[in-house]
Image 1 (cartoon, helix red, strand yellow):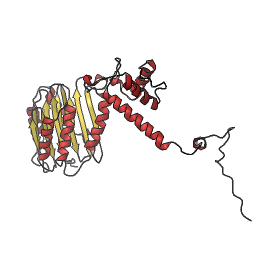
Image 2 (cartoon, rainbow, N blue to C red; image 1 turned 45 degrees about the horizontal axis):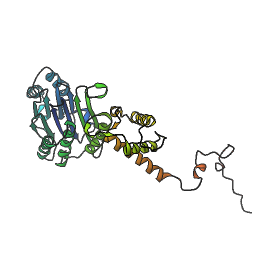
Image 3 (cartoon, rainbow, N blue to C red; image 1 turned 180 degrees about the horizontal axis):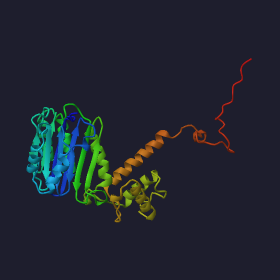
Image 4 (tube, rainbow, N blue to C red; image 1 turned 45 degrees about the vertical axis):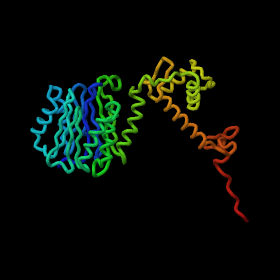
Length: 333
């Protein structure tokens, strides 16, 4: 059985300043993140697609690990592959050298664009503007490699992307000690099946960024005092973490409530002991409190004593609810 062909556009990149390697990809192919992206810290990154040869991932990393350049890896992998005419490959090496290959039998439009420290490639696309737009977005978008890779995906989709539509997307970035438990998988996110996978990937990344990463500028930290402390106490109170008065004094009870909130919402990386808070946490907490306030307002009963007659209510003196077995009606004579 012939391997499936799937239209895909991807970008492989190296950020020298942070020692990061990453791949971002979108395709009309379910779970594209399980096939295309490969990366290893200090080694490089690879995207294998079209009639993808999945061996290009581990074999390519092995060659890169041994010191081969991106150009050499592309040449050696494709020369030894009898199906190369249907393959597409993008590689960035340990030093940021980039190279790509598009087989002559890849379905139109297919091609690639190689830049400084990155390469963009795609097949079954609307046209060359897709990879060109991706390259320009990566080169001009401010921020770190995550911001730039996501921007490149969005730019590719704006130019038409995969001409069959959208289904799956992924973002995979490695950085030494940057991942959970000091592992190297700094970002590893996939959207396997979605009507708008790039937008969904960006939504998930926003939450992942807030929860797992530490990318905010320390200069934006806010001191917890006065109105800020009072707002935190108010929001923590709405969510059931704090039961004291909204005094604006950041006392032991307030600190304990806030610490519990951060822990239960997986924000350990945002914990601080200097009476300062990240703006992202203030925003998140306010959103959660606002949602809880709306929930209470929209669902609160307006009938007097309604809760005492709810499904979990018990009548005075115990026993079954007086409404559990409604009296039978007598027939008319």
